[in-house]
Image (tube, rainbow, N blue to C red; front, side, top):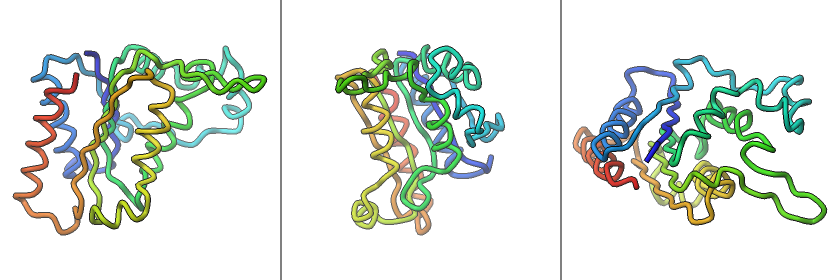
Length: 196
C-alpha cells in the first residue's frame, strides 16, 4: 500500500516526533511505500489567501497553489495524520492544510441540482489518526472530539465508500509517564505494520 503520512508539530524534539517515527517504522515494517509531508518543516502556509479563495471553485486553477500536495494525495492508497490534539481539535496548521488542499473538482464534486457531493478520492481505502491529547478519554468524548470527526468522518466522506479508519490516541498526555508513552509507541508500531 502507498501511504501518505501528514505530520504536524512545530517542535522537532516533541513526543509527537517520536510518534511520527513509530508510524514510519511500523509502515515500513509492514512493507508499505511511504511518503511524509512535514507541514512545519516545509513551511506550509495554512492561510488561504483572498486570491486563492476566489479560485476555489475554478476546476482548472484551484489546484495550482497546492499542486504538489494534490500529487501526493493522488499517489496514496492510505492516509495517516500525526498531530497533537489542541483544544480538542486539529492544530491550525493541519486544519489550514485540509482547507487549502481538499479542493472541489479534485478531491470531491460539489452538489449540483439536488445531487449530493460526490467523492473523488476513492482510491484512498484507509485513514489513520495518531494523536496525543492533554485531556482524559472521558473529557475528550464529552467535548465531542471535533478533530477526530473532521478526519474520520469528513475526510473519509471523500474517500472510498469502504474506507476503513483507525484512531490511536494517548490521552492525559500532560500527566503521562515514560512507561505509558513507550506503550503507546509500541502500539502505534504494531498497528501501522498491519495498516492494510
